[in-house]
Image (tube, rainbow, N blue to C red; front, side):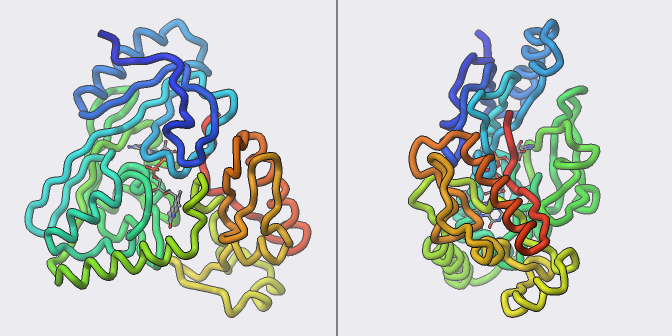
Length: 318
Ligand SMILES: Cc1cc2nc3c(=O)[nH]c(=O)nc-3n(C[C@H](O)[C@H](O)[C@H](O)COP(=O)(O)OP(=O)(O)OC[C@H]3O[C@@H](n4cnc5c(N)ncnc54)[C@H](O)[C@@H]3O)c2cc1C
């Protein structure tokens, strides 16, 4: 039986609830299934034009904007889930959701990932983009990462230093690991007090519930925060009191968007969130073109009014 399905709606796999179908779709729950599926894809796609042979990996779909026209290649949903605890090390499948990992950490009195309380998405997505919040980053706890090379089907293991983590970046996002699928990651943790770990994690969840527009479909922050080193002097002095260390001195992009008068701005079914202006929310049947137009409008307004170039954080699937 074929592992690869056809015409699967990607909006179901995206927290934005936007976008068309994947022409081909593979859901994998183990490394073996991934290898089998990739072999099948090789045969199936051998006569396709290059653009239709592309592969896109989906984890939790919490950082994606899928095109209204869908994706003409193969979308692979990584659903490899397991968590093994050995002393102060947690090894987890790339498809485990971060909240599942945090629950296991609490149950085992393991401290280190409390900063990620309420961070949506999978371990694979967090490693690839070195997700971070409240001064913490995924890289702070990663010991090693296992991945599978799409071209050779060979498995690789990289220690933390070889993952080349940087701000929202890693070797899997922009280095030689770009053609690899993360299959698992090991995290180094420390024994702590269960109640303290639980309450520190919950504190972050509560903060997010209060500050983020979680009642509407969204994909988290649209833009990266602005590195103080890249900001014009006038902007640094105006926003001096808002500068935070996360993980280095940044000006929160939300503040710049408010200043540029963009809070609540709408294009079609997409709106700059009133609650957190660095989020765009899908207020009803938004199209990906609505979101993209709104992003362009925001970039232009901030450039024109404040002289700052905003960098998009969300990934486009098209
Ligand atoms: C409400 C909300 C709040 C958020 N808050 C934060 C925050 O505080 N900090 C932060 O950093 N981010 C935040 N995000 C963004 C997002 O949650 C993170 O970037 C998250 O790590 C993405 O994981 P994912 O599994 O959903 O990845 P996806 O959105 O599925 O994919 C993101 C990218 O990772 C790739 N990818 C996914 N899995 C794998 C894999 N196994 N192997 C190789 N590549 C893979 C995809 O191809 C894609 O390029 C937030 C998002 C939302 C919706």
